Image (cartoon, rainbow over all chains, first blue to last red; front, side, top):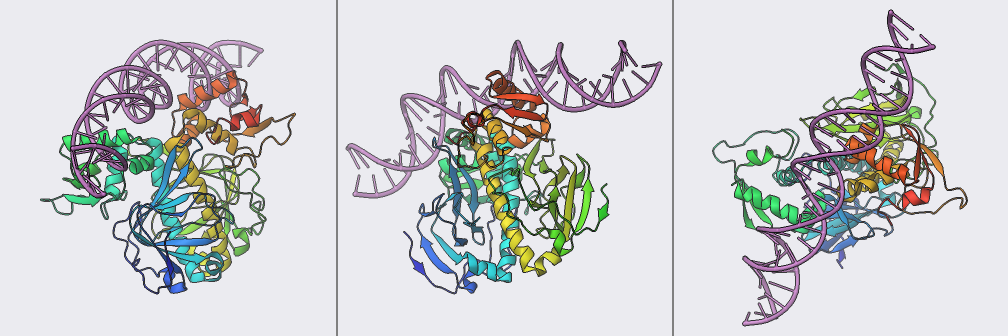
Length: 238
Length: 238
DNA sequence: CGGAAGGTTGAGGAACCTCAAGCATGGTGG
DNA sequence: CCACCATGCTTGAGGTTCCTCAACCTTCCG
C-alpha cells in the first residue's frame, strides 16, 4: 500500500496529455494548497475498491489512474482513465461506485469531504473538473454505443495525442511530418475493457493498422502514428 | 420555442422515478429559490443544440429530458436521460457538448453561470447532482460496453421502477404481487439510441420478454413487469 | 534454458445489424 | 362512417462484425 505524506508541492499544474475532450487546464490550484494529504503508488496498485466508504475526494497529482466496474460474472468495464488534474472518488454520501487502480507510478492528493464543502474555491475547481470529466464520459458513451472496433481504437489513439483528441480536427500541425509517438500506459486487456471490446479484437485492429502503414508498434505500450491525420479519419468524427 | 417566465415555485422537491443509480433527493432546494428563470416545453422540443454557447445551467423541474450526441453520418447516442432534480447544460466555458431535447412536457429552470459561481449553496447542490449523474454515466458505460441486448433492455426497464434500479437487489416488495407498470416516455428508436442497439433489436427483445411472460405491453410506451424480480435477474447484475 | 506474462493469429460461431415487408394505431377528410 | 395516410412498431431472411476458443509467438527474467 502507498505511504502518506504531507506536501505543499504539485506536479498537477499542466495537463499536457489530456485523455478525453478536455482542454489543458490553465494552472489550476492543486488540492495540496488546501491541505490535502499526498500518497504515492506503484503501477497496478488499488487506491480503493468499489464498495469502500466514500468520504474523501482524490486528485491525480501525477501519473495515470483508471476507474472500473465489475459485473458478478467477471466482465469488466473501465469507465474512466484519469490524468494529472483529474478528480475521482466522489462521495455520494455512501460508497465508492468504482474501483480505482493505478496504471503507472502515481501521486494522489486526498481531501476530506467536509473540507471541500467548506471552501468555495475548492468547490469551483471541483465543478470545473466534474464538468470536464462528464463531457469525456459523454463522448465515451458515443464510442461504446455507436462506434466500430476500428473507430474505437483510432479514437483511443487520438486521445493520446495532445490537442488532437477533441471533436474539432485541427489538421496536421506540420504538413511534412505528421507523425507522433504515444505511450499507452495500458495493456491490451485494459484497452479492451476500456473500449468495450475483447483483447483479440484490439490486437487485430492494431495489427491491421500496422499492415496498412498507419502506425508502427515500437513497443507493446508505445505506438507511432505515422500520419496522425490519417488515424483521425478513422475515428468516426469525419 | 418555449416561453420564459419567472416563478418562485418548484415541482422538483421529490425525485420519485429516478433513472440511474441515484437515490431520491431529499427535499433539495430548487434553483428557483435562487432566481432562476423557468421555461415550459412540449414533448420533443429542443432546449439547446450541441455547439450552442454554454453560459447557463439548467435544472429539470418537471418532465423528462434527454441529452444526445450525433456522429457526422447520423448515428446518434443518447448519453443521459434526465428527470426532475437533474442538472444539465453544464458550461465548460464554451459550447454545449450535447443536444438537449424534451421527451415529455417539461419545465426547466435556467440560471446564469456567474450566479452559480457566487453562491456556495448552489455550488454544493450542483456538486451533489453532478456526482450522482456521474455515477449513472459509469453504470451506463458498463451497460454499453459489456452487456448483451437482453441485459440492456432489462436494465432499462428496472431503472424505471422506483428504488429497484440500483445495484443492490432489494427483492420483491410484496411476495404475492411483484408486478409493476412503468411508463417509458421514449419511442423504440430513442430507447435503441440510448442502449446502443437498433430499433429492431429492441423490438425483438421486448417481444421475446412478452413471449416468456415476463412483461405485458399495455401500450407502446407503457409496459407491465409481471414479476419485477424476474426482470431484475436479466440485468446482468446477478 | 525454462517458465511466465503479455500479445498475436486463425477457424468457427453467436449476436446483432441491415434490408425489406407487413401490421397496428390514430388522425384527417370525403 | 369509412377510406386513406402517416407514424411507429414488429417480424423475417440474410449478412457482418465481433466474440470464443485454441494454438502459437515474443519478451523478459531468474
